Image 1 (cartoon, helix red, strand yellow):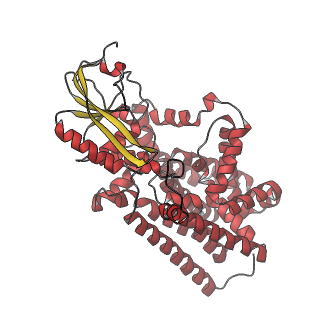
Image 2 (tube, one colour):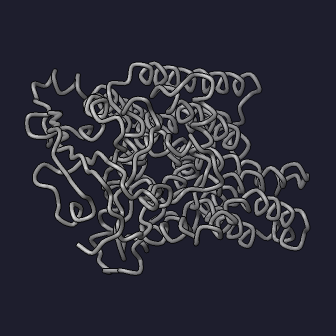
Image 3 (cartoon, rainbow, N blue to C red):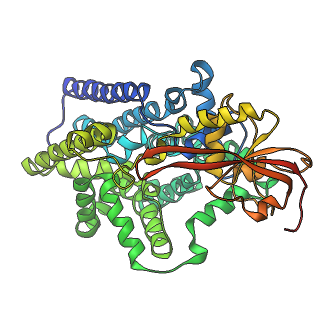
Length: 498
């Protein structure tokens, strides 16, 4: 790095980082307050979870639901309030990364890390949705910061904060368990820190993390470990196809997640500079929180499909690694950092104002040109279903799909009314299979949202009478929309053999 910064310069970089973080967070809050899209199905599902806070849910640990409960309690169930925790947590994560980078390197690098974190393509997108990534990245960053302080200073408070961050991270997303592996890799690879293996303090931190996480473990034990089974199922490793295509797709997607320049530089450093970077203790720490999870996700991608955002925790320390290296490259590094800011701002502008950009370019919104089609039309569908239900007030809504169930619970008025998921075989495939049931409902009537066309005989056999009472067509685009027939199913007969 260049010569040491003065205290005044360091303060200026801190104020600049604070200003940039506040600026893009405020901009995103304004966007959310005027959001033109509806909830995505997973977001609607998380909102339904938040109506009954628990220690776990079918596919995720509980923090995502707790956050929505926390933000909607004072301001209601608007999209703004449901999503509010996401931009706020990402802003807090950026400031933690500033503190971590300043401690390891200097305030100049810390400013660039905080600014670029908020502008990474994945973060620009993530701030506009409520998902498990926001709390995961927050607790991951907090955990690394506390761990660095604990290793250097040894105070109990830092070890306990590390344990608390780890436990809350596990309650946010199970990927947090890799944090333990990364921390262990760094300690074992760094001679001056190996003595901590026999110290009671990190073990006390581990115990605290376990106690914080324990309620979710007990919840899983009481429900047949459904969350763990779901996590294993989405990895699809048991159905491995072992192909380089998946790895290629994963690597290609990371140019979009991290940014094209940043990811290209990261690949260069891993392929050409790894031994030298590993020899330095500070960059070894950063690599320890990159390599294990990167190797694991890459291995999974060889066996099955992986989601692009699974790699998200890698880029907290990868960003620090790339920024520090670029700042040491003189004019070339400054040019690449400037180009990165420009590219990421352009990307953010497109994703935040997509409809306006396409109209300006003279491109028609269609199913093929609209990546947001799946978050359009749900409020209109909810209004249409509300009208149909008003005509049949004694019938309970029924669907055959998890996403549709969640959307109806939010968009049909009044909200959070009973929606039963059709599940005649009793297998547990999602949250609503766990929480809704037709058991004991013999003789009841239902309003079923069904694909356009005649009612499936396998469904009709379970009811005394059925009739189509509405055809709902919500044209999102000329070639795509929400199309359902609504059937009134009368006199549920219970489990029968069609």
